[in-house]
Length: 282
Image (cartoon, rainbow, N blue to C red; front, top):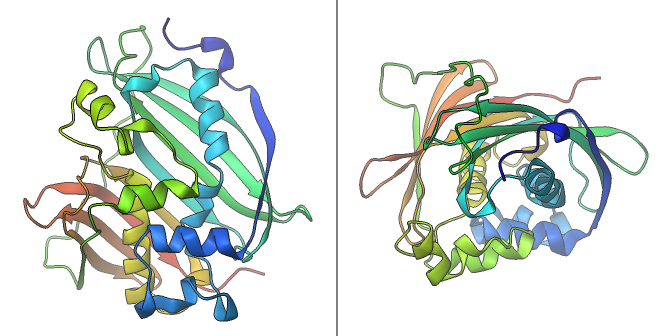
């Protein structure tokens, strides 16, 4: 069928999502939190892992997939940028509105990129965060559109200032999916093989959650509310049970470059990472 060109620029939403402290804690457990960062899991002193934001507006991502008409059997999360305007409350209502902003054509047999932008506010209308999402649709290239502009952010030419390793258990996708991403590629062995993987793969956003915890715990420990911007490219899939190594370079006051790799192979799983943190603007 191909991509639906009429969906470009049309408003999606508003989409409402009510959540409570248990949703925040379940998400945190899904991205590896535990007794070492209990503030993400314990309601008495609860704080929110910033990437809870994108997991909690998964319904918006679903609308992007349906409205764009992309072949859902061939989609992978390509890039993600999150801009935080205010700290995320530990409970409340998210109201999300956005649009599909671009289609990019990588060529016949090479896939397409679908870019969607959204703003999420609280119930009182206060803007909480902005999401810029890029989906790589492997089977939808060759429609005659322009290719995406080249964008490359390189790691500093020196050893990283910090290295954090964690090993998600083999069943981690089963826990992470409780936060909303129920796509079969993360749970169904037969479906995963049908689309070219040996077994169900980690959610890219789950790996991003591990990286986000590593960044916060290293650069602004105990203060996830100070995260201002988090951006990255998903480079390669990762199978559950593999050790995640997040490498972090300080690049200035309140800023860092980062990437995450498969510790067994050295393959970059997430690249071109940008992290900014500081006080909430007035």
